[in-house]
Image (cartoon, rainbow, N blue to C red; front, side):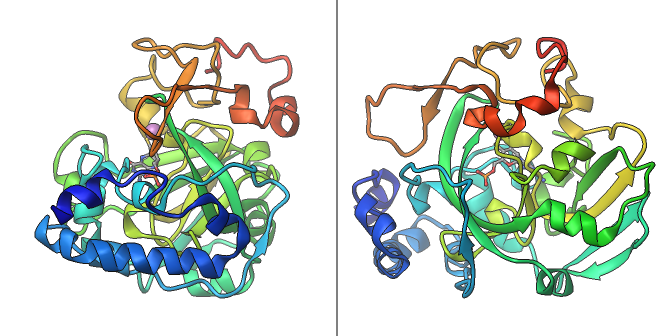
Length: 322
Ligand SMILES: Nc1nc2c(c(=O)[nH]1)N[C@H]1C(S)=C(S)[C@@H](COP(=O)(O)O)O[C@H]1N2
Ligand SMILES: [Mo]
């Protein structure tokens, strides 16, 4: 019975809207309540409770003018409905298996066309960044979306500190490769490690976020701990998780999804309702965690951030550069 309840929670059962709007204290109360209710259920269901308990609170962070004013998807959905193929292709696989990933200590290699290459301790990187909460919608290429209160810092600030050379036209990101910690890498679903990339001006856009947490807590492993990218105007697959390497390049990076099926997943991957995926429409999206029979929502060009990012693609044919 408990198991059923934990799987069938709806928006109204967890994180009521007022709780989120009014104060973080209330959120954490609702989180505690959720954890208390669900821990027994999770154990019974064979889920590793550590995947939900791991989160330490993040103490100090600001808010962002880029946050959307929408009700976040309940924590329970954000952390149990995931795409993270390193842990399997099922939406529930990451929550079940990501406890295998050891995220401390963590280092990030910076290389390529950059004045300050090196292997940096994530802790040292974080000391120099200002954390803020940004409520962004993540729109998956599979035509669903969720709204998440991410916590992170501006990628542009980090890039300025690393001082790319004038030859740096792109930034490439790589996820950890370790099949022992990431058992999905034992299957050849993608060419590992997972690689993503941005054009330099996309990486420098103030919307682009390096995220280290969500819902006031350190990032749950299944959501890409300890460091992941969030590019809110692009399809979710651009937002690469568990980053161990940042490389500045002159050439366009070879990205995992583009390499695996270039007619389906372009390098740009800007959210665009007018450009269908070859196998399905991108006009609308299913809202994760919504009540049964909730209509799909209309997908917005650039996921609603046209004002901030449309200029990046001026003069480009978006049907061709999808
Ligand atoms: N390393 C890595 N990053 C990844 C993925 C992945 O499989 N591996 N999946 C992507 C896809 S398709 C989506 S939609 C988002 C999902 O993020 P979430 O699980 O935090 O919602 O992560 C993206 N980042
Ligand atoms: Mo996705």
